[in-house]
Each structure stands twice: as C-alpha cells, then as structure tokens.
Figure 1 (tube, rainbow, N blue to C red):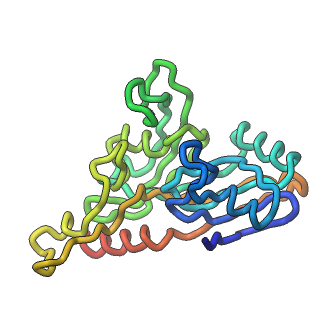
Figure 2 (figure 1 turned 180 degrees about the vertical axis):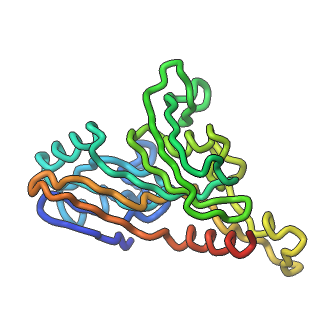
Figure 3 (figure 1 turned 30 degrees about the vertical axis):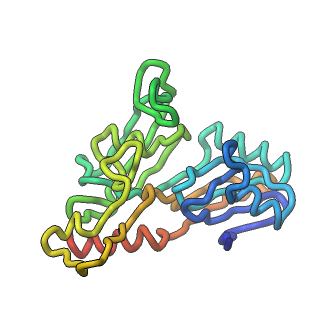
Length: 239
C-alpha cells in the first residue's frame, strides 16, 4: 500500500492518510492493514499522536521518539494545533458560517455512536463555513478545536446538515447518481448502478503544529481525494 509521505525527520513523520485505512490496529481484527504497522515496518518506532477514523482521509502526524510524542501530545491537549477538514453535507447550512458549541458523549444505547447531550457530555467546539454550494448539497470547511469521537459528523448532523454518506448520523450508506438525476438517469437493461460514494466524505485537509524539537511552525495541506473530487464535480454539474 502506497502511503504519501509529506514530511519526515528523525523526530516525526507526516502522511496523507488514504480513506478506509485504520490509523492504529483494530483490537477486534489486529491483522487489518493500519498506518502504524505499515509505517513501523518501514521506519521503525512509530508512536500515534492523534487519529483519523477509518473512512476519513487526510493529514496525520506520528511521532518517532517518546520526546517528540510528548511534545506533540501536549500541543493537542492544549488545543494549539490547527485542524481543518472538508466535508460534503446534505443541504446548505444557514447561516453559511458559524460555530457549534455543544457537548458530546457516547450514545447510551447505540454502541460506537455519539450524541450531543448535556448529561455527561464533554465540551466540543466546531467552526464551519460553506466553501461551495452544490445544488441541494454543499462542500463545507470545518475547523475543530477539540477532538471528540465523531465530532464533526455529530455536530453537523445536530445542526441539520449530516454528511452525504454516514451510516451512523446521516440519511444514507451510499450515494447514487440516480438520486440527483432522477428520471434523467439512464442505465442499461442489465446494468447494476454503482455508488458514486460509499464512505463518509470527510477529509483532513490541513494540519498545523509546532515541531517539538526545532520549534518551527509546520503546516501541511492536501487536496481532496479522488472520490470526493468526483462527487464535487458531479454535484456541481447537476446542481
């Protein structure tokens, strides 16, 4: 598996994580491909600093020494790290720019899911801005200042604009072109329609932090992956 390397030195490594790849080993399936193991095989010691969910693509930093891990972790805990994402959502948020400041906690009855609640919820803040309107959908830029599980997905769904594909918090598990083309969509008699998108369309587009040793500000930005670019193009045409 090819993992794009954005930066590496003896202290840390920054990568562009592909979608549908685990950040760390799965406790239920330890043999499933994951970045920590893939990078360890090539670089030796790799220490996770933060994580991206399996379906999420984008910029991710790993430490290569305990000291670097400590320095980076302190920045994440102190909310000194710049974290910007791009998401494809249902609808066009109104207002087009705003802040979501709502506590998040594990769902009491649905394992693995989160929800906005004042009962035991932890502080979470998400700022959003509509980057492009795509008919009944939109590309939204999101900056998070906390790192709660599923934070962006939960907050945008709470606002009424879930991600286009989201089996936990959205309206569908896959997105088909026929949904927006309607009667204009033509397929062959024996053709089975394939989904345009079959994963949560969330991309960590930008990450900024201070190098734990050199104290230099490090800033990395990566473009949307192919599947999300294709969605933006199709929605833009039909919108």
